[in-house]
Image (tube, rainbow, N blue to C red; front, side):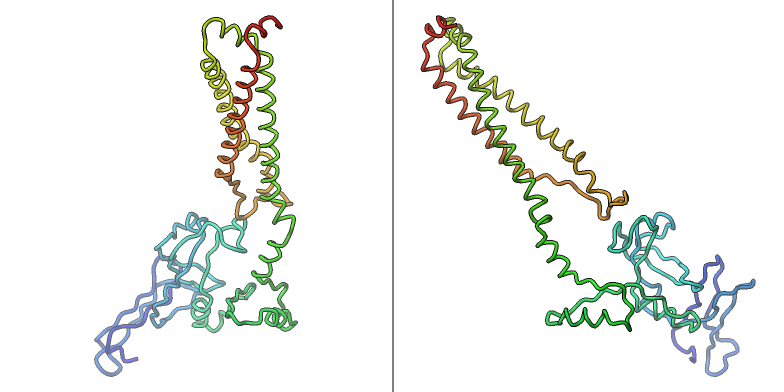
Length: 320
């Protein structure tokens, strides 16, 4: 290196406050016009000292967990230094994540490197070695033989404990009847059954109420109310009951649903699952159910009016 042009070198980073310094000097060149000047900071150190050739991927771009950013103050767009083994590694946090596959938040903060970047940096120092590989993800070509690859990876020389094919895992879940039909399917059938029971209960309740209150309606008619006014009075009364009942039922359903399904938010050992369980309500289905109840309510009112019209007011007063 003649150090004749722009400097492409930087000092190896360390975790100390004071860093080594490097500059291009024009005094006492070995040859030519310039020389490189490396000034080591004072004090003893067991860290590696020296220069490295500046690379566009240094500091190493990483993504970090929210817990890492909160505990270190190295958040999105911030540079820092972490230690891998005995080697200081400069990093630049490109983005943060809350959850990441195979990394549990209960295990503490985490960061994700590009493995090639990290290996290249560690290979600058031969004694540092290469980080141990304990997990590998593969993106396959469209025409790849997935079965042959899985069989090859299970060979003893690789020493892998398990090989998972995401496509096969998703297919097995979709074909599992306990999942495909046992979740939303069974709940939807239960919703329909409850809807039928509610409609039947509303119809019977309105029918019995009209039968029981024939004398009351006859008295109202004798006081001068028309059949239309009696019908509107009955419709207002039961519309209020239906509206309050639907609103209360939806609210209590959400509370009871969260309470009854809260066991899905923990593992068999009682730990919180990741990603967390989210209870979602199909509001379109709920709205459809409410419309169905209102239709039944309207039909019940029409039947009630027909029942009232069949019996004269005088007859109702004599019977009661």
